[in-house]
Amino acid sequence: VDDQPDVVELLCVLLTRSGHECMTAGSGIEAIELAASFAPEVVLLDIGLPDMTGYAVARALRATSGGTALYIAAVTGYGTEEDRKLSREAGFDRHLLKPVKGAAIAELLTEAATRRSGHRA
Image (cartoon, rainbow, N blue to C red):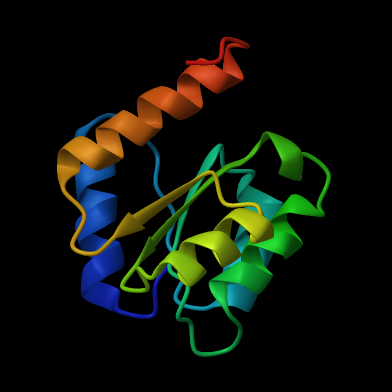
C-alpha cells in the first residue's frame, strides 16, 4: 500500500518473482477494502497516505476478523524513534525505511511464515 505507483509496482514485481501473490492499493481506504476481499497474510504499508495515515490503516486492519493474524510491515520514509513508537502502538510488526532492500523483504516474509506456522523466531 503506497500512494507512489512506482513503489507498489517495484514491490509487487519483487514479490511475484519470488512466487508470492500480490495486490496493490494506493490509499488507505482502498487497502482496507482490498484486504476484506483478498485476505492477505502480509501487508506492506506506507505511513504517509493521502486519505488516512498508515497508522489508522493498520488499526483498522487489526480490528477486522483475522486481523490479529496479519503481518503488517511499515515501508515508509518516516524513520524517527517517535515514528517507530507510533507504528508499534498501531500494531505494525516491523518498521522498514525506504528504500527497502529485497533482502529485508525476504527476511520479513520468512518471519511472517514462521509466525503463521506457530513458531516464534
